[in-house]
Length: 111
Length: 112
Image (cartoon, rainbow over all chains, first blue to last red; front, side, top):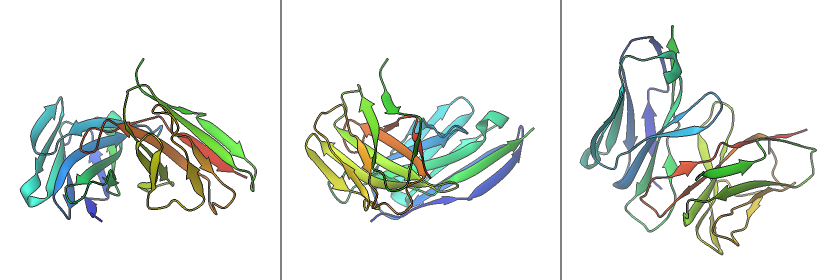
């Protein structure tokens, strides 16, 4: 099956700093999502971004499907940005409904 | 209020007992999923269902069972055969493959 790798595994930031999270995938995809898991465990949808660039406030994401990667940018980080960020993909190669997740990037923003 | 509801939020069971976790959605989604998350780990797929009366094993289906008798509901039973059932369980749904998935708030299961 498709492999999804996220980097870095851990990121510690000072409040106000900018950062970039990366998601690489081993096969062509039709769908890519970014999620933020908050301290209570809930997964919050950040972006549905099979290709192109999107922005939502201080967050933005870019997916370059032809090169098999996606980037999530966090600008002017705040302590509420802390948590785990996951990317998830659908492969184009089958009609399978599996949604495959990366291992996540744990972000800690210090005041 | 539209969304995905998992219940209960916390569940405690004695070892050897089967337990069923509830997942209900009113989003009219065809596909539903169950994931397991252990502390500090990512999400692992247990079972998924593309349509009513159909479901497939995910990557870690052993010790679990599901049913999909109604479009809105996809309950997960953790059986006594599951060696390490204590974990955080997340349910998700979406319209179709290649569409945006949404998650419930999760159920924390503790087996003592």
